[in-house]
Length: 261
Image: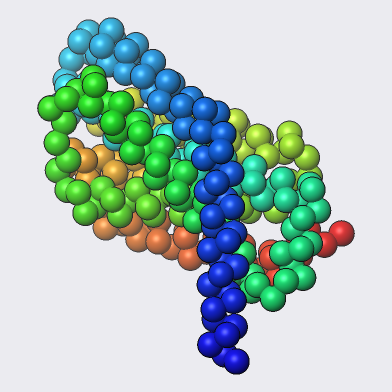
């Protein structure tokens, strides 16, 4: 009986994950192409046109310095957007009730949505990296293991944040508030386009309070071998927030916040 339940959970988890992946792959022109086009524009404008005027950044060509930051920006926004839009859609359509009354445990429901967000985030990150090779073909990853680890951890973290946003959202407008007014400013001020070492002491201290700085710099350490922050501290904080957001998401599912009305 126990083995049968495990098989059923595996099947339902795979079905939900497959549905989430198929959801964004079915409209790949809207989900996968825009990040590639947008990042190409960043590379053309900031890398090819403005980059030579800026010169080196921490000993690297400016376009090379930008690559990890732009990949992280794409991973964060896409993993977040996939989960927040998907989960709010099932809330709006009332199909979430079918999941809640099914024998599928809450952790499997959460995991299915998170895996969908991770797959989209990682896939977009790979696409952006491939695009970057057209502008800097001699790019070499300094630490592949750290790079891949941070890529997946970041996708998980912001997928969880998207899930929490979707739980509390009561309209389609509400799911765009956090990405527009919180995530985007923090990402741009998180060292995507510059090193905080070039900032005055006061603004450098302010930047240290930006959580995006640690995510971007940890990924840059993996790709380039340089960072403005402690890597061990950054990884610890990412792991801690994943644990906190996972616990909070499961609690909200169990309580039915924003779902059972």
